[in-house]
Length: 123
Image (tube, rainbow, N blue to C red; front, side):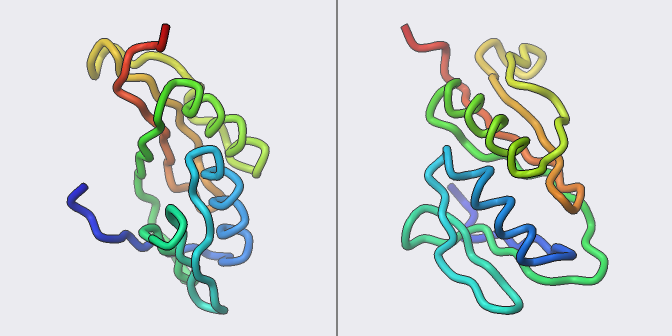
Protein backbone atom coordinates (compact mmCIF):
# COMPACT_ATOMS: atom_id res chain seq x y z
CA UNK A 1 0.00 0.00 0.00
CA UNK A 2 1.49 3.32 -1.03
CA UNK A 3 -1.19 5.57 0.47
CA UNK A 4 -1.02 6.75 4.06
CA UNK A 5 -4.52 8.21 4.11
CA UNK A 6 -7.22 9.71 1.92
CA UNK A 7 -9.79 12.41 2.69
CA UNK A 8 -13.26 12.61 1.13
CA UNK A 9 -15.28 15.80 1.42
CA UNK A 10 -18.92 15.10 2.31
CA UNK A 11 -22.06 17.20 2.68
CA UNK A 12 -23.36 15.60 5.89
CA UNK A 13 -20.59 14.22 8.11
CA UNK A 14 -22.84 12.28 10.51
CA UNK A 15 -24.75 10.60 7.66
CA UNK A 16 -21.57 9.74 5.75
CA UNK A 17 -19.73 8.44 8.83
CA UNK A 18 -22.69 6.17 9.60
CA UNK A 19 -22.87 5.01 5.96
CA UNK A 20 -19.16 4.17 5.72
CA UNK A 21 -19.08 2.46 9.12
CA UNK A 22 -21.99 0.21 8.13
CA UNK A 23 -20.94 -0.38 4.50
CA UNK A 24 -17.32 -1.20 5.34
CA UNK A 25 -17.94 -3.22 8.53
CA UNK A 26 -17.74 -6.50 6.55
CA UNK A 27 -14.19 -5.49 5.56
CA UNK A 28 -13.14 -4.91 9.19
CA UNK A 29 -13.34 -1.09 9.03
CA UNK A 30 -14.36 0.93 12.10
CA UNK A 31 -14.56 4.62 13.03
CA UNK A 32 -11.37 5.33 14.98
CA UNK A 33 -11.83 9.08 15.41
CA UNK A 34 -14.67 11.55 15.07
CA UNK A 35 -15.29 15.18 15.94
CA UNK A 36 -17.71 17.80 14.59
CA UNK A 37 -15.63 18.36 11.40
CA UNK A 38 -13.98 15.02 10.56
CA UNK A 39 -14.21 11.25 10.98
CA UNK A 40 -11.37 8.77 10.54
CA UNK A 41 -12.11 5.20 9.47
CA UNK A 42 -9.88 2.17 8.98
CA UNK A 43 -8.74 -0.98 10.65
CA UNK A 44 -8.75 -0.66 14.46
CA UNK A 45 -6.12 1.90 15.47
CA UNK A 46 -5.29 2.85 11.86
CA UNK A 47 -7.63 5.48 10.41
CA UNK A 48 -6.77 5.85 6.73
CA UNK A 49 -10.03 7.06 5.21
CA UNK A 50 -10.97 10.50 6.49
CA UNK A 51 -14.30 12.23 5.93
CA UNK A 52 -14.43 16.01 6.18
CA UNK A 53 -17.45 18.31 6.17
CA UNK A 54 -17.64 20.36 2.94
CA UNK A 55 -20.20 22.44 1.09
CA UNK A 56 -19.54 21.09 -2.42
CA UNK A 57 -17.78 17.70 -2.54
CA UNK A 58 -16.60 16.29 -5.87
CA UNK A 59 -17.16 12.60 -6.56
CA UNK A 60 -14.24 10.16 -6.63
CA UNK A 61 -13.79 6.39 -7.08
CA UNK A 62 -12.51 4.33 -4.14
CA UNK A 63 -11.76 0.61 -4.32
CA UNK A 64 -11.47 -1.34 -1.07
CA UNK A 65 -9.74 -4.73 -1.06
CA UNK A 66 -11.82 -7.64 0.24
CA UNK A 67 -10.29 -10.91 1.48
CA UNK A 68 -12.49 -12.99 -0.81
CA UNK A 69 -15.62 -12.98 -2.95
CA UNK A 70 -17.86 -13.45 0.07
CA UNK A 71 -16.41 -10.18 1.43
CA UNK A 72 -17.29 -8.40 -1.81
CA UNK A 73 -20.86 -9.69 -1.59
CA UNK A 74 -21.11 -8.72 2.11
CA UNK A 75 -19.85 -5.20 1.35
CA UNK A 76 -22.42 -4.73 -1.43
CA UNK A 77 -25.27 -5.94 0.78
CA UNK A 78 -24.16 -3.80 3.74
CA UNK A 79 -23.66 -0.69 1.59
CA UNK A 80 -27.14 -1.01 0.08
CA UNK A 81 -28.65 -1.57 3.54
CA UNK A 82 -26.82 1.57 4.75
CA UNK A 83 -28.45 3.65 2.01
CA UNK A 84 -26.01 3.31 -0.88
CA UNK A 85 -27.22 3.17 -4.48
CA UNK A 86 -26.33 0.12 -6.57
CA UNK A 87 -23.78 0.81 -9.31
CA UNK A 88 -22.96 -2.79 -10.29
CA UNK A 89 -23.66 -5.92 -8.26
CA UNK A 90 -21.08 -8.50 -7.22
CA UNK A 91 -19.55 -10.38 -10.12
CA UNK A 92 -16.58 -11.08 -12.30
CA UNK A 93 -15.17 -8.25 -14.43
CA UNK A 94 -13.07 -10.34 -16.85
CA UNK A 95 -12.29 -7.30 -19.00
CA UNK A 96 -9.88 -6.30 -16.18
CA UNK A 97 -8.53 -9.84 -15.64
CA UNK A 98 -10.02 -13.35 -15.23
CA UNK A 99 -10.29 -13.24 -11.40
CA UNK A 100 -11.33 -9.58 -10.94
CA UNK A 101 -14.43 -9.86 -8.75
CA UNK A 102 -16.01 -6.59 -7.64
CA UNK A 103 -19.17 -4.76 -6.61
CA UNK A 104 -19.98 -1.04 -6.86
CA UNK A 105 -22.22 1.43 -5.00
CA UNK A 106 -22.63 5.20 -4.84
CA UNK A 107 -22.41 6.69 -1.35
CA UNK A 108 -24.73 9.53 -0.17
CA UNK A 109 -22.52 12.14 -1.92
CA UNK A 110 -22.19 10.23 -5.20
CA UNK A 111 -18.71 8.80 -4.59
CA UNK A 112 -18.30 5.50 -6.50
CA UNK A 113 -17.23 2.82 -4.02
CA UNK A 114 -15.99 -0.64 -4.95
CA UNK A 115 -15.02 -3.73 -3.02
CA UNK A 116 -12.75 -6.04 -5.01
CA UNK A 117 -10.75 -9.23 -4.75
CA UNK A 118 -8.29 -10.51 -7.30
CA UNK A 119 -8.35 -14.09 -6.02
CA UNK A 120 -10.15 -17.03 -7.62
CA UNK A 121 -13.22 -18.50 -5.90
CA UNK A 122 -12.17 -20.56 -2.87
CA UNK A 123 -12.75 -24.31 -3.10
